[in-house]
Length: 210
Image 1 (cartoon, rainbow, N blue to C red):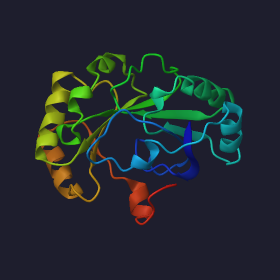
Image 2 (tube, rainbow, N blue to C red):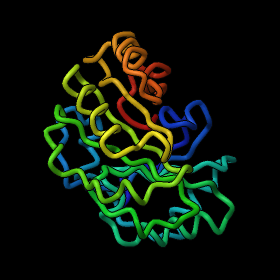
Image 3 (cartoon, rainbow, N blue to C red):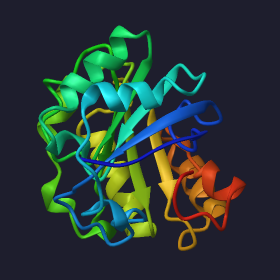
Image 4 (cartoon, rainbow, N blue to C red):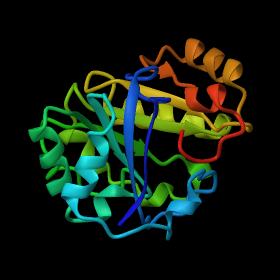
């Protein structure tokens, strides 16, 4: 099931600022307290992979992100990824961090969200994914308050995540002051980066398609 396909600026990740085609799949088995894509829980249309690939290829863009919802809930996501890779696309998958990422094609950049306490889904984290991470993958911690930040720092250090891949700390839009988060990061000495949701700064009134 596909919720939406759109062409926009990559707002997050180390690829922020690049044009990107997004394929948002339907369905999620998490209910994060600060989720901004609740419309993807149920809305969507069943589509053939060839049809999805054809729509992606209508845009002159080599970067594609598969997102959700939770894209790894759909077994055929791997067929979609393979079809896009076969056409020379650079593919990213953003996953909630509670699903096994071991069977994702190794050519894919996996963005793994690590759920902090404020999400109300911290117990769902699959820490077994951490040893599977490569330097081409990314970890994202969404931060709402100081408790989230302290938990993220403790998790990064306990699992020795800094050498594995880029680590992104993303303030909850409208709830966490980015300057404060930046100051905490400077004081902590953790090798991570503050990530702003660029698409929300570029199109502040848009709720979909960015």
